[in-house]
Length: 155
Image 1 (cartoon, one colour):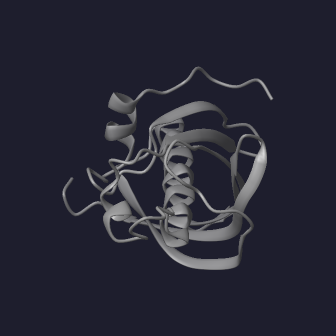
Image 2 (cartoon, one colour):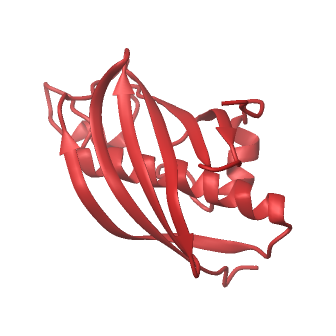
């Protein structure tokens, strides 16, 4: 894969509508827009995350649904990068379906989540993505994500 350069948080803020405390992608490590389009991104998990106050006190574990959301945000970055390359209009990408979600390890403060997302198909604004998350080279989660493009009402 001949990846593009990394993308820092300032550029991610231009790609995604999410903001603190719900922005869950810290950096894009690389991406490829040629078939199959794919992206590699990361999230640094720190004890300062607001969800650790209640999940679980004394044993902080990142909620699985937020790992899924982070994978979907990485897919959103890939979708926006592809749309930018096409010179397309501003759109939002909504997560509409999750299939085959699997969790194999817990994610705790100090972990660095690495997301790998590949676009399987894109038809009429609906993108199917296969995503995985790992920590230290060990898979912690995986899922198939379906996202739908819609006009951005804020644009």
